Structure formats: C-alpha cells, structure tokens
Image 1 (cartoon, rainbow, N blue to C red):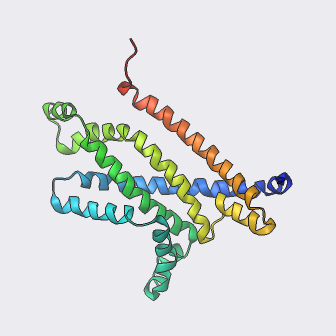
Image 2 (image 1 turned 90 degrees about the horizontal axis):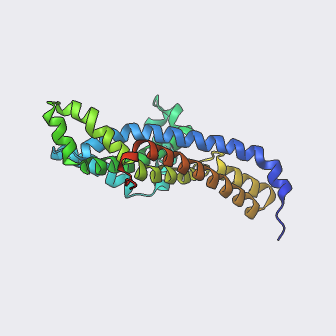
Image 3 (image 1 turned 180 degrees about the vertical axis):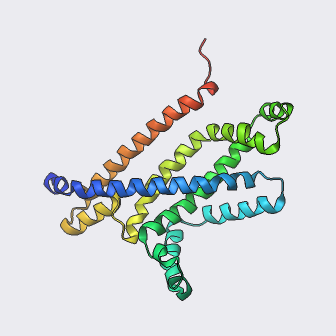
Length: 232
C-alpha cells in the first residue's frame, strides 16, 4: 500500500479550514454548556426536592440518549413543524452551525452539571464551617467559597469532558458542516482514499487532544497544586 502524500498535501487547506470549524464548535459548545451547567449543578445539590428533581430529570434524559439522536432531533426533527418554520427562530434553527452548537451545548451541560454537583458534594466540611463562622450568607458562601473550590476540584473530570466533546464535534459533518471529519469525508469522496483521508483527520484530533491535555495539566498545577502530596 502506498500512501498518497500529494493528495493530502493539496487537501491541507481544507483540513485547516475544518480545524477552525471544529475549534469554533468546541469553544461555543463548552462556553454555553458551562453557563447552563453552573445553575444546573447548584440545582442538583439543592435540598428542595422539586428543584433537585427538575435538574436530575434533565441530566438523566440528556445523558441517557445518544448525542447523534439529539443532533438529528434538533437539526432535522424541528424542521418538520410548520410553527417552527414560520417562527422568528427559524433563521437560527435552519443553520447547521447553530443546531450543532445547540445540540453539543445541551449535551455537555448535562455532563458538566453532574461533575460540578459531585465536586460540590465533596466539599470538605471544614470549608463550610469556616464560611459559616465568618457569618457569610448562603449566597456569599457559594460565591466565594463553595463554587470556586468545587470548580477547581472538578478540573480533572472536566478535562475528560472537554476531550470527549472534541471527539463529539466530529458528528457535525453529518449535518453538512465541514469540520475535520467533514474534510476527510470530502477528500475520500473525491479521491476514494479512505486511509489517507481519515488517518490525516486522526492526526489532527490527536494534536488537538495533546494540546488540551497539556493546557489542563497547567491549569491543575496552577489551581490544584495545594492538593499535591508534599515532598519531604
């Protein structure tokens, strides 16, 4: 088997264009997903049964259904309703980029909410008692102590979620977007070189994963250094 470097070299601009699309999808999905996950995580640790159950149902349904099904429901499913097509939301819901970002953000918000909730539950009692001893209100205690502490401890688990979302963005090619995987599909369709096309896409994803892992390691060293065992 001979690897056709010439085809891949000529297709590199397409791959780099797909890289930008992948990064845009990832960044937007993580940003809006985290915005939704913060209140959901707080709801998951609420002592109010209705509030807690509402968030639990949301995270259970989203985590219990495949990402591909969610993407198809948003991009293809909503379009079948005339009321949606005639609404002011249609310009956005008819956009593959918007639908992909919406589906990815909804998906990651459920997983991230459970990560945040787990970190909040693992908060040492000493931190809570110290905040109460200082006379902090519940809102101020969450704002200054509990939430920042939980977010720091959640970094290792959240890094896995970010990497999983990076891999998930490859589904965007199914709804006509030319991301990294979409670039590989295009090259394969034009030249029928599946090995060359997809191995190149794999290299791009590996490089992105390596960069993300390094960035999170630096973040953990910066904000979780106090948890590292001390050297004697």
